[in-house]
Length: 557
Image (tube, rainbow, N blue to C red; front, top):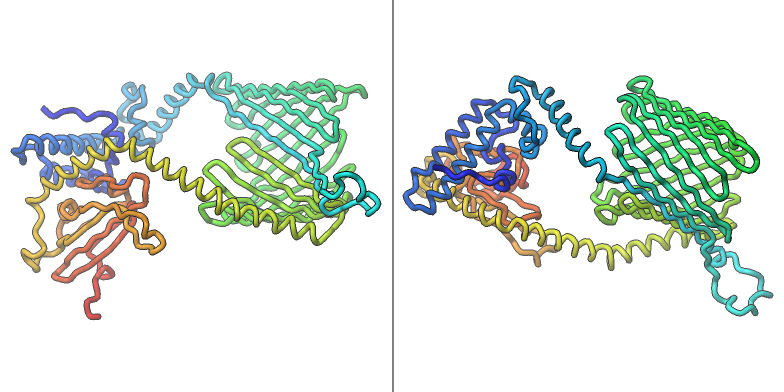
């Protein structure tokens, strides 16, 4: 009797890759692939007990994959949610005649029930720390008569303001969420703090409401109400009204925002604010894959201004962005430019230079780490000094590239090595099992593979095939090549002088295993077709179809 496979073994398999069929394969294609693999790996073909046991496991694995993909319901679940979806409790009560859309709705219902049981364990902490630095003494020095004062020869750099805020969310039910937030601020020796509590309820798929209560030592109690509503699929409105109690009496405030999607990437906003600082604002925001553009105009008391800003998004691994903006109004004119870049998986570092009249020159450094933000505005001078602009621009670039080369890059390389080592350790048992299964598959295939020299008139013959990590770049000579010979398994997949591999990791094919967990892999094939040698190399998840004329090796030279 065949032994059942463990959940861990099944979870590590890609059923489509195992059967070497497309995700859109018909039932006939599935059946043909299943029958062919069953003939190759049937346990009765082996007399050796060990080989027979390994073939039995491969046979069961192929059978399990076919059982899932041949049933319309389980295949729909697998296609949408993978093997984890098949493990969701509750499928036994679902009618088998349901469509994939109905199965999706049922899965989401079961998932909601599971999430409700975990609501009490979930929070969403967010925080901001801002430290203002006064470095004007670097460029705006006192007159010579003060030079005799002790310590005056060194520039005085001071922290003149700080702000710390933190908030957490606590889901109470599927529709209700409690939000607790607090903040502390200090500037030039004076400070204060506040604490706020809000209760948000999702009333429907189109809207939500939020009640807010707050108190602080500088201001009295605060009562607020926020409402959000989708008016149409392309238009929504947000209203925020508040009552602030203070020693001067009750100060009401109201803010209303109307937004509309002008096209797929563009949103227009109209905002009206009434209260202490009344204003009307209109803006257009266009956000695409490669750019972010904003234009805004505000008329208000005491501030009126016009703003235009542009951000370019580079399509690189570090998600580099450069930005620039111009803001002009009754308070003066400010030009700002800067850049930001991802320095680790959860961290983004950015810097911007602000040049304004009458504000002067400032450097703003910001670090986003997960849901925490660290902001450092550094005021350099009250005047428009070219030297301050130069050092504010060049200084951060020099510091960043030095830190990136000497600290960040070595740290990330060490972290990557640690992660790869952990992956190798955790996958060691599975890789060993896969290797044994691959050897068993190779043993089962040997009787079906012709030798390249046996007959040149045969159609497609795999002469040599390797799978794993190849090192072709001269700068990576120190890295070790890690490949396995997959000549026999590939020859087994040849049918009617054609070899077709789908867009999936080759590690899931019969006779394959992953020789370098977590690293980039390729498949290199040297094959013979009608007596002529061909060669091709493809990425791990790239589709392959041979023979092709473009693979032919030119032997004339």
